[in-house]
Every structure is written in C-alpha cells, then in structure tokens.
Length: 466
Image (cartoon, rainbow, N blue to C red):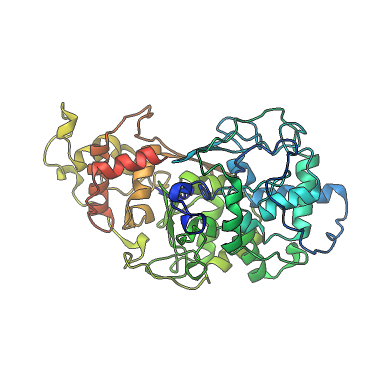
C-alpha cells in the first residue's frame, strides 16, 4: 500500500492580507500547475522582479545535447504531473485542483502562441519559473512551486526553455480559466506572500558537474522540490525551514517524515533501498508509492539516472533527524502474519446484510484474495504484505484510507502496480464510509501501530477532499 503526496493547502494568509478568505487561494497546492492561462499581455497588475544578475548560460555542445538536457530537467521537475489532465495531451493543461475558493485549472505550457507559452521570451519564461510572475506581470499562485524552482541554475532554465520551445508539440487547446472567489482572485495579494516567503537561492555553475552531495541537494530542493510536500508549513503557508522534510498534511494525503530519524523518518533505510523505491515505487518490507507520490515516481524519479538517484538518496538520508511526537517506532517495523486466519472471524464470511460485517469480514471479502488471509501478500510482493508496511504502520490513517478509496495505479520500468479502489467510482466493490472505517481499524490493529479508532466521519472527510 502506498506512500503519499499531492498537496492541498487550505489554510490562511490573512495575517498579512487582512482576511482569512484567502484560505487555499494563495497556496492551494504544491504540485506544479500555473493557475490561469498565460494569455496575451494585458496591462500589468504587478511589476515583475528584476532578473537576477546572472551570467550567460554556459554553451552546450550542440542543439541535440541542449534538447536532451532540457527534457531531463523537465522530467526531474515533474512538469507533466500538473500540466496534464487525465487522458489529455502532455503539457496542454486542464488538470483541475479543487479548493474551497474554487477550482484551479492548470495551464497549457506547450509552445502554442495563442493558448500556451509560445510568445514567451526566455527572460519571461524565467520570471514565471523562478519568480512566479507570468508574462503580463501578474503573480502566479504557488500551486506552481517557483519557491523551489528559484534554486535552478541559469543553464538549466535555459535548457528547459529551449526544450519546451523546440521539442514540445504545440497544442491549440485553451483550458478553462481559473475562477476563484473574492478575494482569492486578487493576484496582487501574492506580493505580500512572496515578500515573506523564503525561496531557494539559485545555484551557480553547471549542475551536471556537482559532487554527490551538492547534486543531491540540488535535485531535492530545486528540481524534485521534495520539501513542497514533505515539509510542514507555518501559518503563512511558507515551509518551516527548521523542520525540513519533517512531514505535513496535504489535505487528503499525508506526506510523511523523511528525515534521518530512525523512529519518525527513514533513518533505517539504506541508500540502495531508497534508490530502489524512487526507481520502482516500492521497497519490499518498507513502502509502496501510490497517489501523488506514485505519480512522482512514474513521471519523474523512475527516469532519473542511477547516479542522480544515488545522489538524491544520499542527500535525503543525511537530512537532520526531526522527531514526531506521535511516531515512536519505525513505521515499517509493525505487525506480523496472522497465525490462524481460518478461525479469525469464527464464522462464515458470507453475510447477507453488509452492515453487519465487521473489519475481519470486510477484509476477507475484499482484500484477502490478493493480500492473503494472513496479510503476507503474494510471494512476489506484487500485492504487498500488510505488515512491515509504512502505510499501515503509520499512526496517521490518512494514506491507508486514501489507498482503499482510490487504489493504486503506478507504471514504471519495473512494471505496472495496480490495486482497485473501493470508493464511490469503484468497478469492484463500493464500500461505505463506515465499512472503510471498520476495515482501517482492523488493519491498523492487526498489522500496524494499533487501533486508531477511525470514524466514518473521518473517511467521509477524506473522500470529499480528493
């Protein structure tokens, strides 16, 4: 079962702006989607920051090498994840991110001049990517993680721009505009947030020549922007720099602590193990990626070079440990196989009235065919063990609930990992909030950190949040 990730920040920034109605608007997400299509220039609503005094990008050997580098940067930055709607053309936008203030719609970032970024100069492209200011001078909302991308080198921004302009096929599709309610639609409010938010400082030189630690840091903090999800935020929704990668709520999912803590984080993981997880989306006896983290693995980390994966893993594993008051034992260390599964429920599992089913009955009817009557999973761990599993072992049930609701769908070079969801659109079995609560409580009590007394109301909240 999965590890987390797509952020939905539904808190406020009213301390600076004088209103709590900007909840979720100034920072509705941390994925990476612009929120309003970059139309032809209009009267500027904000003054774009002056370009950083940077040196001219180092020359690249030839055009092909430049395109190859740009494609790799786009993959590492995972641009496709938010700028592609389900079933849509890559980078053509249209992905809907729901917030309390309205739906944020990702924009078309193909080089189409009318509907995309075809008219952007390289300087204007840089202003959007690293400074959060689009071509007409209006501020972007930080659903676009420019706070992290600010750390990109000039050379990598140059390569990224060249790739988008010359290798990505223009798509003449205009996504629906973002229509947030007042005052979330007042873009000038972002000036205050940008003023107080700590941004990554741009790296210098050729990032491809960095030593292992520097390259790993560059990947983690700038391109892969790990902290966008895994770092908790303050009341202004800025990342808490002194709690880097200590974990945080993303609305429906929870991005776990991935510091070097041996009880709250991933301090017991090896570098090779973390590399395996980032490449394939699973590490037997530890974790499996689903949801937004599964998407990040599928579209981004699984395509990194072996050298970059090791650099990224080495850097993350040395991030100072941050302890979690709720986590007192490594998430992957809980549970064991059920010894006598045949007498577990003490009665036949077939019940005519589903409302009478308890956790074990629901498990037997819906989960045991794949995960085994004893919870050990399949021999090849395609269906993973439910013990020694970070999702079940976490004291926070959010990711387990979301996995049951939405299932798993992850494709990498390692193959396709699939699990049906049991939510309202399931083609297998649609479980109610009460049934999922019973199932989660059973799983956590039997294979995890203990019964968390999950309620149907909790399941209902998460069902609506995604």
